[in-house]
Amino acid sequence: MNDVKSLLEEFADRAVAGLPPADVDADVVRGRRALRRIRARRRVTGVLCIAAASAAVLVVGNQAKWWDKGEAEVATDSPDADAQTGQTPTAAASSAPSDDTMSLYSGSALALVANGQAWSTIDCKLAPEGWTPETPVTADRVVLTPPSVRTSDTDAKLELSAADESQSLTAVRAIGSGATVVHVGQASGRQVGQIKLGERWLVVKLPVDVQQWTDDVVARFLESCTVS
Image (tube, rainbow, N blue to C red; front, top):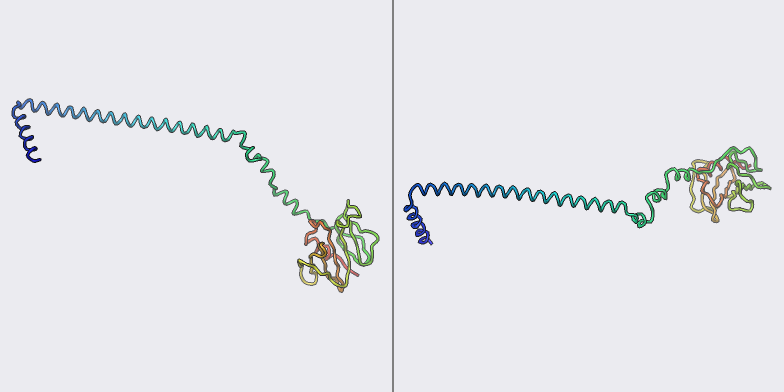
């Protein structure tokens, strides 16, 4: 390999030695000019390549945005979108109960008003508004009927009775404290409240629909009563 290199260098020296000095200098100048032209062409080519690549990116980007926008519009304006969900957004919002509606139902407790009518041995200072005693009234039993209810509808009536012994209740809840504790529980499938007044017990059998008869209403009603 070294021998080949030496031979090439020797041939090159002979070729250069055989040329006039001016020719060698002229070749060097021409070679430098050619090298500068090649470099200039490379720079121009690089600038053109960068410009072409930038233009391609912009074109592709704009197309992608156009397609995305088109798909979004189609998805938004599709007439089948609401049909697939089964309801419109307005219908879904209206189906959920509002806070005002929930407050209305939760706050629909029965109103107790002053009672100016004595009921035999059972006398209560408060009574459910609009409820009237059923006649005849016995000594230890009073039946109250709500307004706009048939007299034969016993499930809607309230029964007050005085007894010497308390009733046996299940699922008992104690309301109040001290000597005026009201016990509310279940007996024979009905909700019952009872309180001890003196030596006797006052027992109230509530209507089947007890939504309005909250524990607080039952306690206030019984605590306003006396048994003679």
